[in-house]
Length: 393
Ligand code: ATP
Ligand code: MG
Ligand code: MG
Image 1: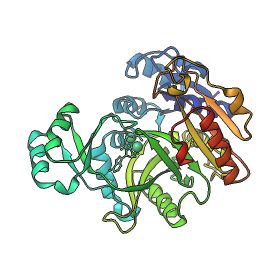
Image 2: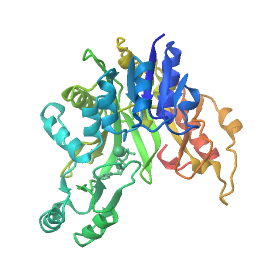
Image 3: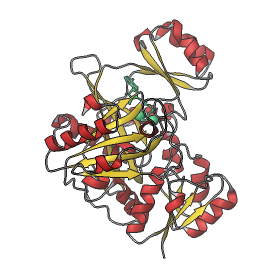
Image 4: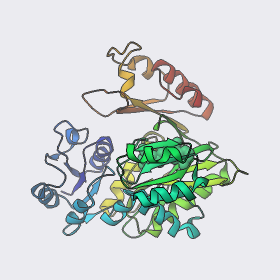
């Protein structure tokens, strides 16, 4: 009986477990939380800290191959496991994705083959660098100061307009290693999912267009025509080149900015990458014949990677904890009955016991025969649930 392992117990681990089980695999989840979304549905739940040597030994003993589902898994954990088992993605590539400074250096190193660069930026790790940037890099203003490590959903970021604001912003972020990035006039954002096997076989999905509200993904549009074809092709080729260049194994998501043509940095700009399936790829479960989680399973298990085919246009709406509270802040159960009566709605709830504002509790994917009907249903569902981003559907 083959068993596949995952470090981390969140919703990405849960959907990985579902995909693995469908193919007949047993699963093991390493996660300290007793009530985690993935731990609750896995055959084995090793309930210890991620870096507990006994837990890691048990995971390695149970599993043929091991992956991770959260970005900030200690790279050392993956290194330890890799001494005895197949681990994908590797500690080396995960460390790059965990640090914006290393990540941007990687994007720069493969810019010639990927054809894309990231937004202009400067590294700030010391007070001397801070002063130098203040004095010499006014080209980066207005800009966004981002911590090099641990940021997600727009956390660990401060937007600044003037050089004078920079010192306070750096102090606010704790004086840790940061990058100051030029604020670009975005016309859209998109992301591309790539899967690459141990044998270097690569498949990818078409780019999906993402709408963020307050730094958190709110809506994903996934259908032909959601982006101009030339841009979509460029983004897809760039993501594949970025994965190839680091010998990536597993599922990788690359995020891009689309900047107005004619402006200084016009065109396609690479933002960051996530070394795992991604929130913006959840639509693939219901709209494609192989999902991003299926591909993660295939890649880990050393099976041939199917080139996925999208069979329906789709829109995904993220369901944050806010939906579980009414306008007066009182807890309420969302009206799933009304939502599920709409045609082509696919509800995914992650089994989290406590709803909190901003917490990812689930998502709703809408599929249909054509883009117009998918949009109509998505709008209606967003209205029923008072979701943000309604005007972006
Ligand atoms: P994630 O949850 O996707 O990992 P994150 O916290 O790592 O997000 P980013 O993706 O870097 O942060 O930024 C969050 C959002 O802020 C972006 O999706 C984009 O909307 C906006 N943003 C970030 N950098 C820039 C920029 N240089 N110019 C304009 N907008 C930006
Ligand atoms: Mg990020
Ligand atoms: Mg991002």
